[in-house]
Length: 249
Image (cartoon, rainbow, N blue to C red; front, side, top):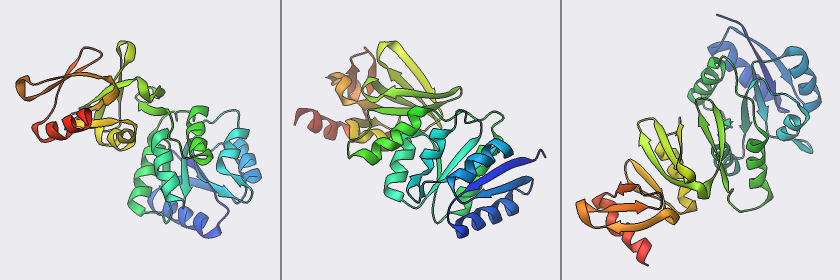
């Protein structure tokens, strides 16, 4: 198996030691370097050229995002590590960046590293993704954009442009204004979690709709929603009464 380079960037010795131990046990084909500060990390990224970087968020007076701002090219896979759960979980899901929450769960660690190291050509981290996370730190407002992972990379979509989402097993088709359609590797459930605070409603096990784009409710066939795109979407009997209550007040 081809040797992979892993860089662990964390100012806590115990955290670095744990990640090193787990890499050694579960991914023995990897060579490992460590950095306890961002200056050393920047030097090692240029000299070591890692395939994967574990990056803590909080450092003394700085954050891991400050390191990314200094890099002109991010040609490695990246897994953030953080103990700040409330901020991290939602921010990283909106931005579609990989993260591990401290204390690290071994199963989640193995899954994240396997995914990262299996990429033949890591998709570069985009400035928009970092911006989304910074947006959470600057105030309580929800972001107006969503990073959507696709087979070709990441798309940055204005949430209000999403008309509805359609489940295709472990994938989701996203229908946008101007007759655009995106196939994403995220499940419909994960989109529901992120978008329900933006007036999206799960009207059926296979459909999540933006209520702002609903133009009509038809009683026939148990209930159909007409979207402003012209598409008609089935609403389940279980959700029909609650939906009508929301829409009619």
